[in-house]
Length: 87
Image (cartoon, rainbow, N blue to C red; front, side):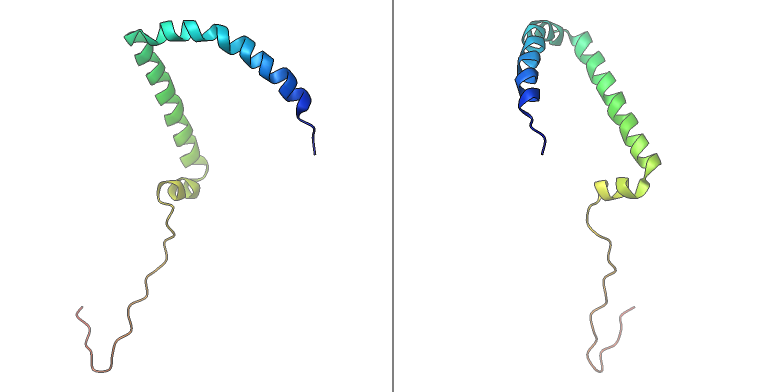
């Protein structure tokens, strides 16, 4: 097993160093309706592209993600003697 201590010891301070100063500009940018619209458009386009890529690469996986229930044929109920079929 890999000892993750060095990664955590360097990762947490670096994430704090990058994350804390970026919070204020992010708040300022989120106040703008134009920036919000642009960010929503970019992220929506990225997610749409990922979905298209998934469907093209493996359509069977995409179908299972949309409808995870297995498609098993349902056997008709057994008939009693003397019972007739409606269809």
